[in-house]
Every structure is written in C-alpha cells, then in structure tokens.
Image 1 (tube, helix red, strand yellow):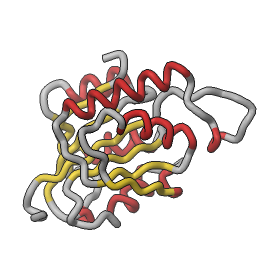
Image 2: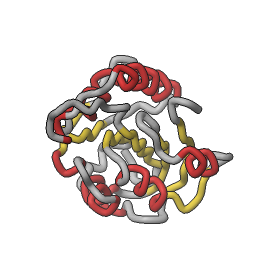
Image 3: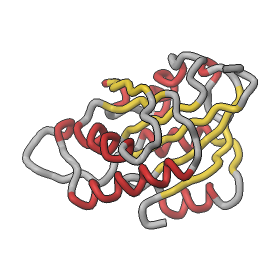
Image 4: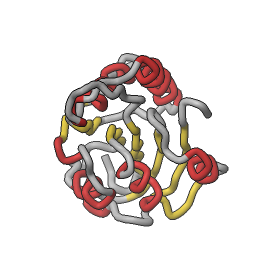
Length: 172
C-alpha cells in the first residue's frame, strides 16, 4: 500500500457494559450492549471500509464487542489484542497507532472512553458534512464509532492530521 493513499481509522467504543462484582477489566457486556455491538457491526460493514487490522483492548467488554461486531463483516481482519488500549489516553492511543505497519491501510481500534472520544477530537482538523456536529451533540456513547481519514505513514499520525468522515451511535 502506498502511504500517499488515504488511510482510514475507525475509533470504536465498546458497547454497554454490565456492572457485576468483578474488576473493571473483567466487566462483560450488558444485554443492550450485545444488541448494540451487533448493530454497530452492521453499520461498520455499511461503511464499505475493508479493514486490514483491528486493534482491540484486552478488557472483556471490548473483546465481546468485537466478537459480536465482526460477525457482521464479510471478511475478518487480522486482530491484535493490545493491553495498552485499556484506560489509554489519546496520546497513548496515538503511540499504539504509530506502531502500525504501513501495509495496513485501514485500521479499526476498539477501546474505551474518554480516550477514544478524545482521540477522535484531537486527530480531526476538519470534518465532512455534519459529522462533528453529531459527535459533539451525542458525545461518544457506548458502541459509537468515528471514521477518520489521513494521508501518510502510521508513524506520522498526530493531532490535527485527519478528517472526520463519519460518526455513528446506536441512537443516531
């Protein structure tokens, strides 16, 4: 893949989690979360983006979200479960993305708030249509995702280099 071709990054927040008496890392999805994860998978498929790589937090709720969402995909991308995504700040998420091999054109990151929302905000220097307005109005609820595009190597990903192309939340 050429670094001159636009790359897509989809930042996907895990679906609604339950609150049983377990550690935060071990929290599973709630019933609504399971439904929303599958719905998000359908919407991700509707984007038409052929994902090369999925980077997923190791938390139970993110792994369950990904397992349900990817069932809707025509083809499963390579998946890497990455501990550093759990509780990561936007800067830490950029560091993870900077390590992405350049042969991966389109990447899906499944993570947590506030990091995922913060990352979408700081990467996007501009936005198409009403995507930013919708994201600002809705915030980044469980199972929401933002689609961003940038040109260059993954090593050059930094604040302000991307365009927010689309935003979706389960109640959109």
